[in-house]
Length: 150
Length: 278
Image (cartoon, chains in turn purple, green):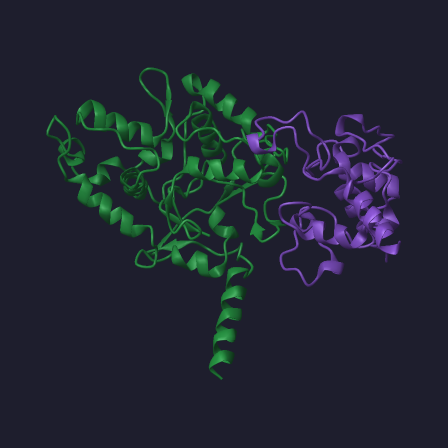
């Protein structure tokens, strides 16, 4: 009985946010650059988000942002504000909006939009129609960022 | 003990690769001080000073360029000197047949790219191939071929120390405008323009990379990462791929226009080719 429940649970997890609609990149609704509602309805996993933040092919947050919590990782960038205490400075909704498409809040920023799949010029064919992170990865990174308080 | 030694050596190597650049250093090559800092020309609105990429490299990389025996790019200059005298093509000519000594091409690099007699913007590679096909009746070299890289290194060396000074008016103006527009256009999934990194953020680290102004006065460059010489357009291609953008082709009108605009942003900086970068 227990075993069956476990299997069902795994199946549900594997299928993603059962019952909750994943918000497609073009359906995201911004409010002054912020996005109040979750993209997936599934709470983000901060540990996974931390890994994504480091991964050069995913978040690669360290390329531009210094982050004391990741001091063990070499090479922190200087292009953007440090992430230390970022959760004290921004609300969850604001951070979600910044991750999805920071240009909605900061016009002209160098920061890539991590959940936008159109409007690019000369995108490499491998990335055509794709976002840098998927919806749950955005929520995971968001959960991680919310742990960065001072 | 042995392991300890190896570990220490490794650590030293790692440290060396991330050693902070000495942005105040002077580039003295074989006793000649090259211009690595110059007041920004009037047509570069958002900079007050233009800076050679050499200033942004580690002490070790900087040092490689100060002595021609240490500069790994000079081997290829020697190879080009051999080619210079070799007859090739149906016309029975070598470079030397028309140009005599390479030093006759002093100053050429400072004006590249340049509009030709037909009004087209040509990079140095285009002029080299025009010589080969029209005058020598030989096969053109591929843009990134070793022969071409060697020859552009040899020709660049003849202008070493002379300030970059490309024409951007008259017939060059429309190409320059095209290059400028590209410089400020965001490309690729990372949605970045040249200016985002090389105008707004030079001097900053982007992960392990120390951002320079993206000047091209040092090309062709011996890049340690490439373990060889590379062209300006190869570097452009790499930059575009980094931002997940479909690059233009080497030798394309687009890259040549961008090259002109970047060359103009380096007006006043010494030609350094072949320079050494990481």
